[in-house]
Amino acid sequence: MCNGNAAIDIISIFVSCLIGGWAVITCPCGVVYSVKFNLRAESPRDFVDMLLSWKHFPNVVVYDYARGLASHANRRQPGIFGPFNGRLLDPTPQNIQQASEGKVVVNMPWLRSPKMPADKDGHPLTGSSQHFALNDVFHQGNSKDRTDILRKLELVPELAGLVNSQCVEQLFSGMRKNNYFLNMTTPSTHIFLQRNILHHYNTAKNQKAMVQYSQAVPSTGKMQTDIHGRAVLAPARAGIQKGTSAIDKKEEPEEPQELNVMKEQRDVTLLHGLEPHIGCWGQELVDEQELMLTQVLDNTKNPRDHIAMVDDFILTRSDFWSLGLERDVDGTILNSCLKIVEKRVDHVFAANSHITATWFPPFSANPMDHLPDNAASLQWIIIPVHVPGHWILCLLRPQAREIFFLDPLSGSHWRNESRTHPLRHIAHLLSPGPWRTLGGNDVPGLAKQGCSNNCGIFVIMYALYIVMGAKCDFREENMPQIRRWWCLLLITNFPMPSEQARMLARKRRRNERKLQDSEDARLKKMRSESISFEEGDLKTSGVTGRIEQEALLHDTMKAAKWCRTQSFKGRHSLPDVVKMDEREQKETLQELQHCEDEDRSMELREPFMFSFQLKSDFEVFCAEIMDVKNLKVYVCFEE
Image (cartoon, rainbow, N blue to C red; front, top):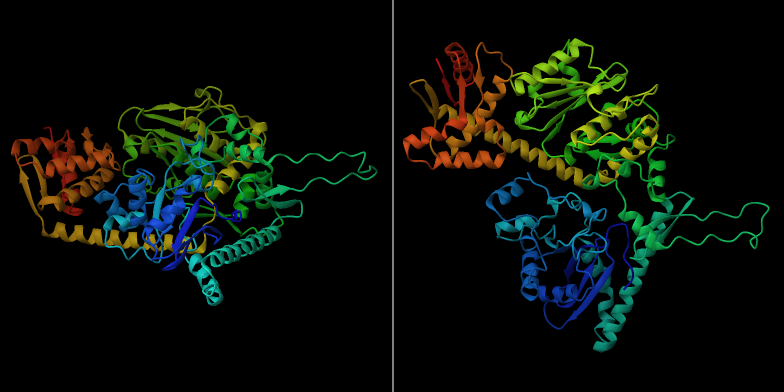
């Protein structure tokens, strides 16, 4: 068999067959890796025979009956498809429901770059020891087993829209013209000729791909295959200088291909390997990375070209110019860099600089509309702020009641009270009480900006280092290298998806909005049918069963969000459930729902209780929340 085309990693496998005759295993680009000639109708047994004959079992297998394939393989070799019997997630009712609603994704970053460190017995190209059996796009709706929804390709962003599910059908269609003369030959001749035909088919596929790739690379580079048969870009060897002969000038030996693989494994531009250390951003780039950056930062190309996509933000070439070249950093790409910090560290939220600009006069928008509902329970909140011609940073640490005002040009606090006052107000809404204020001089070793336009880069690095608790080891002279490193982080981890993948994402978002609209309509109808009651100083309402508990949590969160925007005369405390994570909230609700003892039920309501010191504050709360907003909550006062 010929070596695989490196345009798509060969560990992502497409499996299919013709009914009877012969069955094949191909990579997503259509190169045939295995073939089996059958005397009977095909079954999962045939494909497991071929897969188990491989030296390295593939990480992802796509088949029209994935559940049968995984079950048969695990009977023959227990645990070969795992975890979850080859499914993407544990088949719990919650995971199945979220997958059916398009609310869950399973990332496989090792499909693009090797996992570091590699798992024990991991695949040599990916480093992962996980093996998944997924359904072919055209057959995934045939199964009546609800757990098979966890085998959909669309749940994996690295595969959605990139796997050509028709490549095997196209292969069989092209081979059908050979059936007449092949069926007239003896079995041994049939097998020999078929293998020969497939060999030429693979060779033609690879040659066509190499020609296409060669047209896309500059003349200074060339395409070659590495030790795994993948197409890689290699720099052209330098020519002989004028005035020297070929005898006088010894040829430099080509770098061993094994070293190229080692360089790939040392790549620190992967999101899971991101660390605030000079060993990460200060590493020398390999030739492929330098070439990639040269192409992206080429200011002779169209500035509107789409290069990367972080969440819903599309980054153009001009955005990368502002980050990678010595220019003022644009807000869109600065937000994207801070999103990388948010994704790398748990319990962190990075605010959008375009929205934070509306928090200050003359707009004075409500900041709580942008912050998540669990903002008070987060470890860090990153707030970038742009003043004319300059970037500054505010960091909130609600759990420790600390607020940082960082200006790359100054070690002191911000001097503009119109900027600091709204942010201090946010801090007190999240956690009432005294907050400790810190500036740049309070952070040991924090670097300062010189006479340059690197303020945006300093803001990004401040957020990365302080949030991850590292000591700053970067300086002004490191900024050009750091700029290019952040560009590589975005390009490597958030490549521009295909149009098909973007269409699927838009469809998923539309479905989520429809579900949210239907949920809001259901809650509104439920509230209109509920009966309010008052019990002493305790006010509550609701219907019965599970729906009542869902409405209770929904209304409690909305009421808590409103309380954070108010200034009451006396003390008040928000319900404990506001600070819980989703799992704890669910457990608390279930316990309250199934409680039949009245005394115990009163005790279980405590996590949902709003408490006020003064009756006047209690009455203001009830008037707004229960009468105006028609929310159903638990509330009491101390007087």
